[in-house]
Amino acid sequence: MRTRRVSALLLSLLIGSPLGPGLCREWAASADDLTTLPAGTRIRVHAPSLAPAQGHLPWLPVVGTFVRMRADTLEMQEEATDHGQPRFLAIPTASIDRVERWRGKKGNGRRGMVIGLVLGASVGALLTTEDEPLNAVVGGLGGIAWGGLVGSAVKTDRWDKLTLSPAVR
Image 1: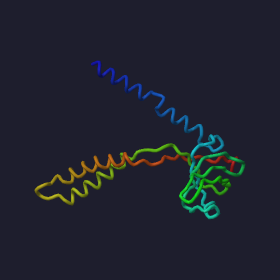
Image 2 (image 1 turned 180 degrees about the vertical axis):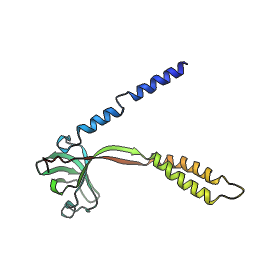
Image 3 (image 1 turned 120 degrees about the vertical axis):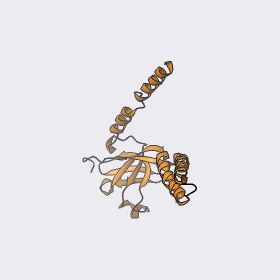
Image 4 (image 1 turned 45 degrees about the vertical axis):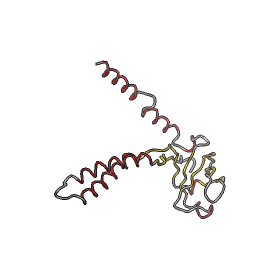
């Protein structure tokens, strides 16, 4: 009985903790506009017309650190790349398609489990015989386990879209 109470207390503390979704929503809402974004924030800018003039490929975004927003330009420090040192960029807002703020990294455990399930069950189904009819199930379960492990080890960046206020455009 005491264990249930302690478990219920811990669960309620986790759900109501400051790490819950309410705090995340408030933080995201406070800086979803470029005019309120603090300097030093990592951003990703999609500006295809910038690419030929600055030596970038048009389909790849420019990643760097936000410096400031002027009336008609976004100023940022580009991250160092394979081909040279980081550069200061002043990008006209008229040429910007999208700006995103970096939100950290996330694991891909769920995605890995789904991919592992499909691949494992498929291979198991191919190896199924009349003598061993459960190969697809065993393959699927093994695929879930391996896919979850590999997926949780693979980290990808999370990005939130920012808005350009009408006054800036």
